[in-house]
Image (tube, rainbow, N blue to C red; front, top):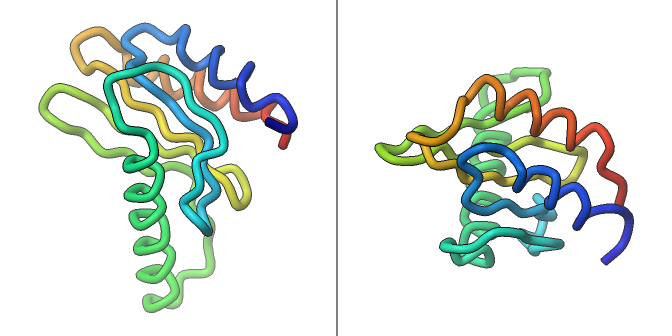
Amino acid sequence: MAGNIQPTLDKIMEIDGAIACAVVDATSGMLLGQAGSGIDMNVAAAGNSEVVRAKLKTMKSLGLQDNIKDIMIILGKAYHLIKIHGNLFIYVALNKGKSNLALARHKIAEAESTLTV
């Protein structure tokens, strides 16, 4: 594993309510690193890559000249966050009842700012 992917993921797992997280190549859907448990991260990486690509395609169709920073999916029991980092993204699943969304987003941004690959 290149760069500091695992230390970044370990830092994210310290967030209250963190279930699992990963760094993913957005183009290929390839999982570059993961931490936590309870989620098949290969499936999550591939599926969330499709979410990112679909949003980029929609933005292009709309003529939007902008960049995605974050994608947030709120489920009944969990938050699923995608933080874009160049051609990669950080995927984080949080237990909704145990996490503070605003604080978690801040801590994910902090961890992302130090990510090197």
